[in-house]
Length: 78
Image 1 (cartoon, one colour):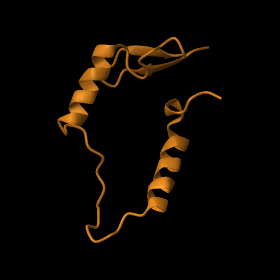
Image 2 (cartoon, one colour; image 1 turned 180 degrees about the horizontal axis):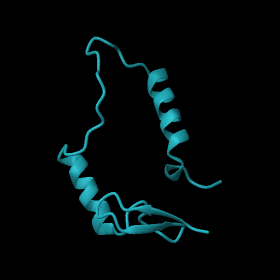
Image 3 (cartoon, helix red, strand yellow; image 1 turned 135 degrees about the vertical axis):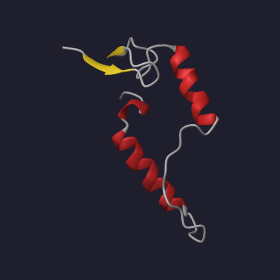
Image 4 (cartoon, helix red, strand yellow; image 1 turned 90 degrees about the vertical axis):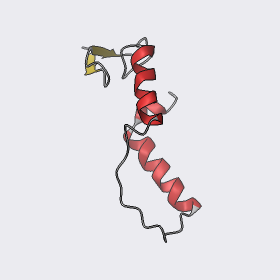
């Protein structure tokens, strides 16, 4: 059984498999539309940031590890 997800841009069904090159998007077009939204700041990750808080290398490493743990499609298969 194949997992189907909705394309974040156009909401068409996308089968989640290695052959789906642009997953979670249905096409390169939808992928680029989404990228453009991020570049235009149409999409944002809302988080209160303390401007006085110094960001350390350890904090960045922890955030990256947490992100990769929850977003496995960014990790190359072993």
